[in-house]
Length: 327
Image (cartoon, rainbow, N blue to C red; front, side, top):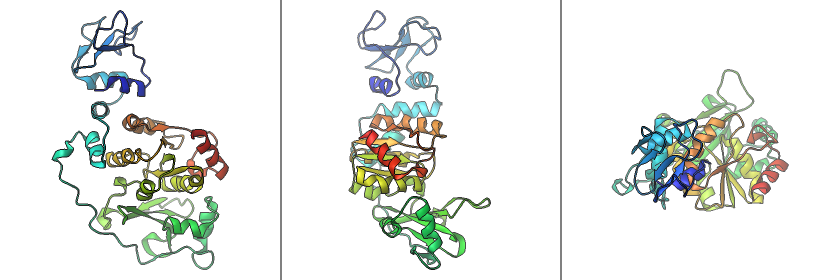
């Protein structure tokens, strides 16, 4: 396990020399000695072993146990962290997923790819300034997009007037240049209907939306200097649309939780960007730390923008300021 990188990424102080440090070790404050005045926990850099100079019971070879004590995390998160910091940086998407799951990528069968595209529902229509779809035009304008025609064409956004998807803005999701699913945002904030509703695999989607990143293909093929990771699609759309001219792109996890497949996609994208920055809502601190536990090794950082509680509420000026702050 790469202890130096792990400890540095998690802001845990360590020493490489001193009266308590054996050759081939580094030392931290013992997490089980609550009054440790120095760095009495020695950690081997060549094998799975650790031990405290003050208490012989504070030793072992299960490094996940030590990681759990240092981070105060769950057993599963500690196990995942050990795997994360025990693998070399992946060169392919398959290697990235293997490093996160602990699987041997050389033994995995090659992915057959996406066999077919799904078709948009027959009731999905383009959004126009006048006529029956004008209310969708006005909604998108209120969300901060002045050039609605260019915006909806760029992201293939539609709307629906009838049936199950009635009164919803339709956001198609592509992967490997194929339409694999879509999600939708209802107009306004109704009490008895979900804000977002997604086309599931049970209904015919080729991929689960939680196995994708929004606009992944274009983010990979047309990168800028900074990539922002957000919670919801309208958060990422606002940042991507207004940030593009200022050297920034954005995507989202379709929720506050990140799956391992999404983590692998982010790791793949880090090869194309100078900085990848997590920007979730201000009330999602726990989720932010969980995502960073997995992605920080790959250079992903996080930020909070004080001017708005939700990235989707940011103005053009605020987005420009945010990007300039990190360039």
